[in-house]
Length: 120
Image (tube, rainbow, N blue to C red; front, side, top):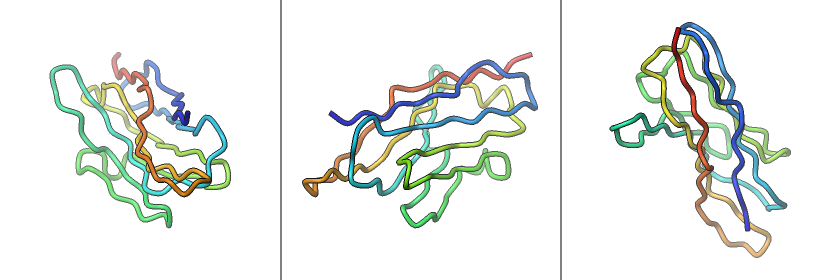
């Protein structure tokens, strides 16, 4: 069973930085498109950033210039570097990926979520 394991969340002051990581838990062939989403209390889950297998990136307007999504295909790990954090960035952050296993099947997976709290 493939799992996406996230790490790196926590409490940070406004203006601070965090880096979230998302790693596939077992041997897989490759990962295609990856996205980081977030969900704040009482709000719908929203796409924050995405990156294709080839490295093409896309960002929500609210995080452009502050967040950077990246991936290490060899390590099958994805990252989002979050700088200049604001209280409105507080949410549970989830990674999402299209995972290809050695039998050729592609399946979409979600990470378990990691809490990011921006507060003084």
